[in-house]
Image (cartoon, rainbow, N blue to C red):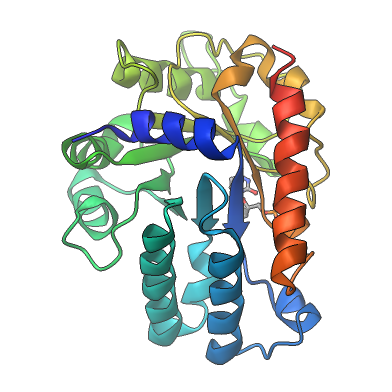
Length: 278
Ligand SMILES: O=c1ccn([C@@H]2O[C@H](COP(=O)(O)O)[C@@H](O)[C@H]2O)c(=O)[nH]1
C-alpha cells in the first residue's frame, strides 16, 4: 500500500501545490443563486467536484457545512467524497476530530478504514487531548495509506493563547505537537503521512519545522487575509512541504466552472511562485 505522503507528493508534482476547500457557507450558496437547503448544498458540491476534481491535488470538504443539514447533508458529503475519489483528487476531510483513544478508534474507523462509507485519504485532527490520543488514527492511516493533519498553529487569532503557551520544558505547545509529528514521520520518504496544520496568517511561528518531514497544510489564504507571499515568513526553509489551502477565495469565483478553474489555476501559479522562493 502506497503511503499517503507518497501519494500527496505525486499529486502535488502532477497538479501543483494546492488544496481547495468545499465550504458551502450560506452566503456563498446565495451568491451562487442556490437555496440554503440540501438541494442547494448538493448542487454546490457537485459543481466544485466537476470543475476541480480532476484538476487540483487535494480537495478539502469542510464537514461542518454538510453536517448542518443533518443526515441528508451527511449523505451529500458521502456522495461528494465518492465523486472526488472517482475524479482523482485526494480527499482531505476537514473534521478536526479528537477524543480519548478508545473513541478516536471509532473516528479512525469512520474516516480511514476503506470499508467505511466516509472513507477519505486524510482527515484533520485536534491534539487537545494529547497527540498520543490520536494514535488509533495514525495506526489505521499507516495500515491503509491514509493521512492525518494535526492542528499545530491554527489560522484564527484565538489559537495563539493555547498554541504558543509554554510547556513545562519550555517548548511551546505547537512545538511539542510538531516534535511528536516528527517522531511519527521519522525516516519516511519522500514525505511522511502525518501532517501539521499551520495557518498562513500566523506570522513567524517561533517553531523549528525542520524535522517534521510531513506535509504542512496552510489555511488562512484569501478570505482570512493571508497571501501566498506570506508563506515565506511563516514557513521559511520548510516551504517545500507546504500545501496551501484556499476555500472562499476560490469558491467565490463560482458557480461558472470555467471561472472556478481559472481561480484555482491562479492560486497554483501564486503558490508555485511563493514556494519556489525556498
Ligand atoms: O487553522 C485552521 C484550520 C482549518 N481551517 C479551515 O480551513 C478553511 C478556511 O476557509 P477560507 O474560506 O479559506 O477561510 C475552513 O474550512 C476552516 O475551517 C482554517 O481556516 N484554519
